[in-house]
Image (cartoon, rainbow, N blue to C red; front, top):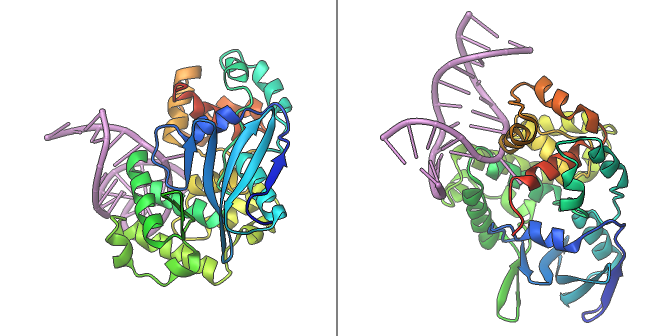
Length: 297
DNA sequence: GGCCAGGACTCAA
DNA sequence: TTGAGTCATGGC
């Protein structure tokens, strides 16, 4: 596909591009995309190919413009569809929401809100590790330093856009290189471990999917040092598109359960009990609960 | 200044 | 298998 062409995608309804933009622009300094009033721009990488795209919405159809670079239409379509979860049918989830008296308001208030994922598993896992046990603002600062130093840069109309650093590149770094960006010793070590696992083909999205069930996929991820239960579940939710994951113990989720249900969840059983009715859709419920912690801008 | 943040690891019991 | 200690840093 050459520059200038447009790909038109038809999201499964209900879908709200405004909700996607809200999520992408929720006052956090995410260096992986840039949000404009009616559109979003980002880099898509496929091996050595890096392209800059722009997505906007026109009467329930998404228009994807290739602003710079060259990549085939199928790859771009697959990426955007996975990124914005465009082919997900939310109706069964909304049927479950309707039956919950404390949460049913979300069906209307967040109508068409689909998960904004992180299709690149390597990026997702590095992000998990970066964000472990620190506040989000600082986590985004760390990510920006890493991406601006090691990511592929595309200049367009005076702005710089970045692809996430390749695992092969990070695999060759040492602890000190990451320490200098203010990653802790442990996080530096974990990130190098993951980068090397990807570079040596011991870890990939395909290998995780080959495990079969969501539980086996989680087990596989847990076998890598630095990926604990929270990160494994987060990666399955955001990158592998698993629909029934629950990041036990998550601080935000606990807040949301307290706020909506008056439940002070501590043990895994507490979480299971509070969210049991949403079995099969717990991933989406968690995203809606996280969503509820931030007011609509 | 103390507590918390989109945790994970190690080690003891 | 569970619990306490440790890591490290910015935000409030």
